[in-house]
Length: 223
Image (cartoon, rainbow, N blue to C red; front, side):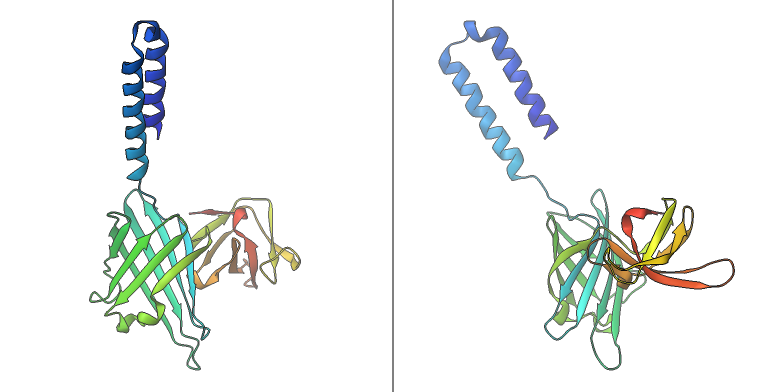
């Protein structure tokens, strides 16, 4: 887009100096060509998915989460599935891939290498398909369109405000007395990410006492 704007400014500048010397037909031809150029650039622009966590919910109560981090055209993704069964069965996957035409096929050195995870990326959605991923407990039941629910991704974070209070629920109305202080380090898994940029964490202080609850993602810095 910067190149497009620069091109427009250059043509306008040139035309302002030479307009009295140019025939109207030549000016219209230039503007028409510029219009075609802008349309072409905007038509081929690639929209990559945003960093964050995406969710798919099924009618039977099962759900799947995809945590996605992009670095230019490289995608790193972590996947968690909850089967909603009496045995509390879950699935997991970790892989990386290169985006081509808004599409990426993940490869993994940690999970089943026969598993094929394909993702089509847009601005706030991911369309994912799983093939030959039974070992990782990822099946076609979790194929579909995932909606972005949070900017958070699983990992280690540091508190970057003076006090970050715990909440019993991911909302402003369940504030607790306990809190973390600036510099405290917390970690959370993918299933700790909640809708609306809240995360569920557990913290153990120097005395060995554990505190658990939701805190605001805005009070944390990714390490």
